[in-house]
Amino acid sequence: MTLPFSQACENNKEPILAVLSRHFRTSGAVLEIGGGTGQHAVHFATHLPHLHWQSSDLPANLDMLNRRLQSAALPNLPAAVPLDVTQTTWPVSTAGYVFSANTLHIMPATANPFFFSHLVDILQPDGIVCVYGPFKYAGEFTSESNARFDQWLKANNPLSGVRDFETVNALAREAGLTLVEDNPMPANNQLLVWQKQAS
Image (cartoon, rainbow, N blue to C red; front, side, top):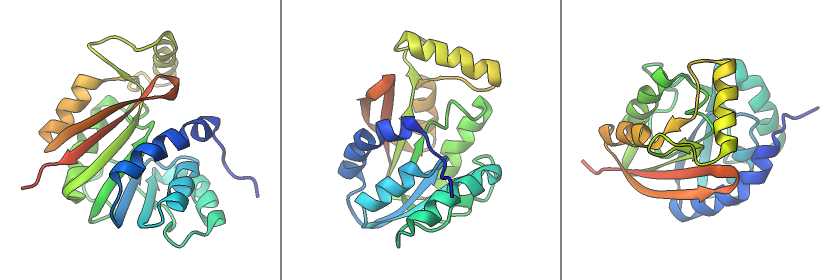
């Protein structure tokens, strides 16, 4: 059986794991939004066995994602569940952690507010959110390659595109999240870490 594969996932999984290991320390449930090929889920669930790693993706992508998850057969990595961030009710009722890689620039910009407002509904008090991907700062791309990537995204879908850090952080803040870290990552990406404010 041929498994889905992304070279980018192979390249960034160790740097991401280093950050997750610092923040996803205690036992609990993780909701991964946009599991893609499943390489991240398998790698992180393997190296963070104290976590119950629940991956998710759009319904059309689940078969591809679940092929890899089922092949891994890890006790803390169940089958992925369908999730569109704009849907009112999410398939996970509570989680201590949320992780998402390369999703905010793929989904329409109009979905970004739902991403934050809905995830905070299921996130436990003091819960952690980690989001990986490219961002603009003060309206400027961090590299020429990210500018070209943005053009490519918009050519495929005018509603997609590299997001402004300030806009994304404002959405997170409105949802009750506080920025903890902004980590530079390989290939001109960032790993943003927020924590839910205790009520």
